Amino acid sequence: MKINPFPDVLAFLEQLRRRKVYRAMAAYAVVGWLVLQIGEVTFEPLGLPGWVMTALVVVVILGFPVTVILSWVFDITWAGIRREDGETAAPAGRDAMPSIAVLPFADMSPGQDQRFFCEGIAEEILNALTRIEDLHVVARSSAFQYADIGVDVRRVGKDLGVRTVLEGSVRKSGEHLRITAQLVDVVNGYHLWSKTFDEHLEDVFAIQDEIARSIAQSLLDTIGPRERSAIKTTSSSDVTAYEFYLRGRHFMHRFRKTHIEFARQMFREAIDADPNFALAWAGYADCHSLLIMYADPRADYRREAARASKRALELDPDLAEAHASRGLAHLVADEFEAAETEFASALELNPRLYEGYYYGGRAKFHQGDVEQAATLFAKAAEVNPAEYQARCLRVQILRGLGRLDDAERESRINVEVLEKHLKWNPDDVRALHLGAGSLVALGEFDRAKRWLSRALEIDPDDSILLYNVACNYATMGEVGSALDYLEDAVANGMVSAAWIRNDADLDALRAHPRFHSLLARIEALGKSSALDTGPE
Image 1 (cartoon, rainbow, N blue to C red):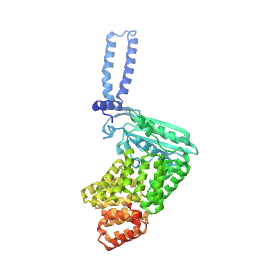
Image 2: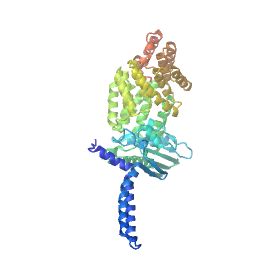
Image 3: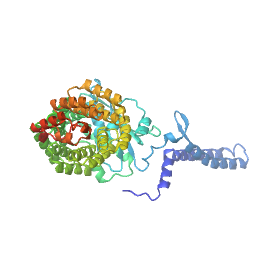
Image 4: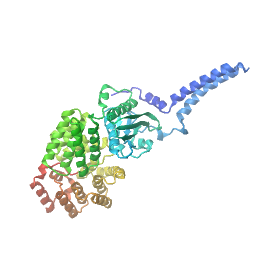
């Protein structure tokens, strides 16, 4: 860690640079020198008295501090002169560390069908930058909300609390690739770095790495060997495998059963094209783990999750995502100690990895350690403020612990996050049914029911949705409706007895004979041993 013994002095010097005082001083010195030279050459032939030259020297000298003051107070741009004010200052809380938000690159391809590729390139650069300890990088879900072309980077900087924004565009036509990227200072809108690449598709890996390195060099004083080696955007060199991988990840972010199935197919294609692609193996393993967790507890899925995650680690033992994938495979197999070890390894490699905290919290919840689960969910929300899942599960735990004031306070924050997310993703069923729990905690029952109804209209047979509808109706005191939805959830595949036993949202049902009959039926079928991984 770098220690600054003169923080105030350096902060003042940084302000001088930001307000372009140095540039104004240099320009004034050049102009002043030229004026004096002209006076020295022309005043005597013109017969002007000597005091005129003396007066000119005094005026030039006195003009220097005036120029410095004016350049401090005003910003002179091509659009005119504007006064510096508090709104153009660097975002609060980031003075000590450079910060950046990487926006999804715009699709400028002829067919406008390369969104997955554009988002994938931006995400690869973002992930590479997160490995630099001295750089604050906004999480994907926060930055990718600003997907519109022409978004005001100053607004992005203010919303996300960053000094800089990376934006760009991609034009992909056949094997030709044109990528434009620019790093923008959100304080004044000026480009700190920009470049256009006209290359073949196979050069995409080198382009991504160069952009990431250039950003790091622009924002940091020095980059050590460790950072240089860490700034690598992908572990594959096969373009076909990479395109399948990006498609798979694009589907994964949608987080519904059908999309997870599509993602699994894409990752399999990536592996077939490049058997040594560690990230593709990790993604392939995660698909099986998520299918076990949310859809179908098949034994062959569990075996495949274990095999694929193990292969990812063999290929790249230093890949944080591989350790997180291996931990998730252990989690869906109820191997909690091994899961926690892998999540800890993932976080040691990348302390900002959301999955390490989120799935680590789930592992603790399954073991009944809800206090530690709540702590890990809070850390997950800290590293990824726009991600709602950990926030919603934490509210559930706080309610169960009787910390109602804390639950209400955090629910208000959750609803703000969810409203913003749903504005961009109105069909996100998971956001609707998890978010309804925060509305229930706030006593907004009618609004919670509207969100649940919207979710049921979109995907009425989803077992996880049905389970969470049951939870919300139970917390609203509507026991009969809650039991109906819980039975529907089990009938459609929600089979986690472990989660049901620890879920405080269902406390209102525990004395009812139908609840005991339902739980006994799950355990008798042996489903709890196959899938004690939780429906949330």
